[in-house]
Length: 290
Length: 175
Image (cartoon, rainbow over all chains, first blue to last red):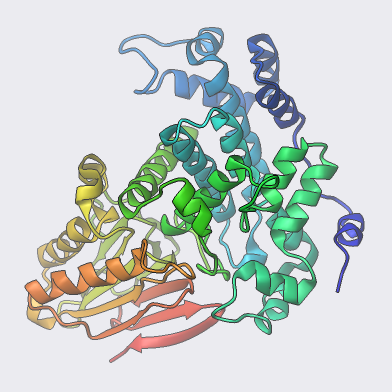
């Protein structure tokens, strides 16, 4: 069995968290929105500027016959929307090429990350959860551990995990049997090394196995856990792991998630993802998978 | 070139037309292959007329459009009850005949320990069977259920359908 710290130490170039994500995360967790600082982040990044211009002039936010420039766009969209655009764009760079170890095509892990963020946001809105921006962030980052697994095991991953795959076992259980840890655990550790707040690390760590009892129980973890399942039903980032995950009964009951709401969340998440992809003029290959 | 109505978003890479989630591709070019990846609870439906050498592939996500009629209007391939008719109509427009069609389905997997609460994969399978039964359509082969991810491939040259999962491939139908 391999120690998580040893693996993280061994990887020469750990996935880096862009400084803009750190700054936006600080704003989200502290509940403060500094439009001036966001403008500074945006002005130094051409791709971000383009994304913001597109969004502000889109059918959703724009005005017929009028084009907003960058400064006007920043004011028009407001801090919350801008922060999400920053996170979407920067996380794209981290996730877009990863996932091959899990049998995912280029772009699939990124679509799964963004889908998780959107699903978590959707569930948080439905349930009036105050920390919906934090839900978005944790949904986005929940599978950072797959980046590490990808970098460490590469093409050997499938042969290593195959011997431990059991139809009745969850995929994280199979990973623990094969490697001594799972991608959620190593993702939580990585988030800790990035210096992210403990609550975010914990959400990443437990997003497949949310604690049911106080004091460990946290609605944030529950929502990100449910969002992960919504993504599976939406066909996002399904690789060798397939659908070998469980929706925790306490999350299902606690959120009052029924068939109708779940299917509605699936369709809304997928449609919103498509809208964002179109607005980003993403070069991702359509269709994820193994 | 395959027809590309505005609701279809399939992309093509060197003769391989990739059908995304909630997407359809129709084709009358025998040099092409249609493929759809990551079928989890979603279901892939392929149809092929070996005489006209016309076929199509649908990747739908949910059973019934009534859950979100507005989105069903924009993305009919998202749902079985709106996507399946579109698939068949599109093939007929290209010259396929219903009585010659070879129809295959793959996917419809479930998350573990669902306990009957959601059963998205099962409901997708049931809706598909209901649609086929109502329209006198027989499935020639299917590979559905479990908790695995599947990739479905339809070769337009001869209608061969293969399914790949965890790096292993098997033929579901061939001449």
